[in-house]
Length: 546
Image (cartoon, rainbow, N blue to C red; front, side, top):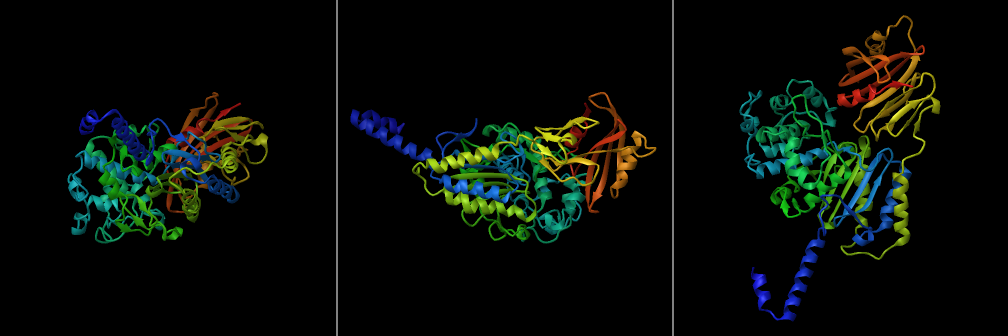
């Protein structure tokens, strides 16, 4: 109102001078983030228009091709615009990707929102007060003093033993318990809370339990209403525990562009358009150093990501990141006004490669807050690389001979007798076959291994006995859960056998096998996973004969 009063008193020339200055000021403010909000989708720009070198980004893509890194996608956002967006076969644009422990950073945002809305008191609230309706074992004075903040900073003091450092022993024990939350709450204390970082998936699960308990909503529904919905994120998959709790440490699937929205929200201090989604103070508290972290030590990246906030990793170079198993990253760089998202399928120590690529190429490419001179030659090279990388191979996956089977566009088809086909999730990767009768083997993005075998029917073997007797006999410590007759889409009778067994004598796997007899041969499809029962069933039960 004061601005309008001044304008009314000015002469015509003075009026336009003030308007001009106002527009300039507004323009500077908006360009610090972007001149739009990507709720309906991201806009694109050239790297040079956003102060980045196409050459350096093209060099990175060439290096990735040379080294054959198991990266699935890279999305780079500068000043609110996509400057690079590349998808590596078999992953493709528009697909959801499992984000693993990047889920923890989203879980942190939901806790901040819940506190802001009054569902939860504050981070100093003892968790025994939150779970006052439960009887908790090993209730020492140390356990009574565990706060919500201790869970957020991975400093609960609980003896979790559920990270890779322990071979996920504690995670397997929790999954085999009747109540995952009770299992975590009953754990003995290893040390006083708040003193030492100890990565614990179980405490992130408790965060989801707390959201559901405090709001009387499933965590996913709370997220859709208060986080995903306002950001325009509509396609989310989140697995639940047997108790119906969304798994707070992981098992979430998002599209890379939606992962970038989470990063962009935090880059803008929790604001989206004219609405404050996550409190600014929560973003600040979540992304500053609270504790030294050492879980990445054996991955040889402890010197670059060894600090932790509220379920976010903090780097000394001025940025922070959501980090997930096998190469899922959301980098947020306030100083560069930049967000970068990686997805992948990298194992073990190779996960540090993503961090090295980001530090060695993407950060150095962002050299100016202002546009750079257009570089048509390097921009064309970058475009050609993105297009060639993202183009799916025309031939599909072949293991021995094409007539023995080819996997393409989500369908495996065998033309040799007996001919059959089945469906599998897009984005699945080719894996090496393990024995002679196996004709193919693949792995889904969610780590379900599946294979097909064709063999002569064992002498005297009945179809109903093949799964529970012949196949199960090859698995260690196997327990047959069920064996039932089914009818395939083509009308052929088959049997589905569900079983559990111990891999490496410690990790429990579930297996679903569908077997059928055709033309004197036994055809079977087997799927194995630590979870994802529904995905396994959809693969094996899609079998049909030509």
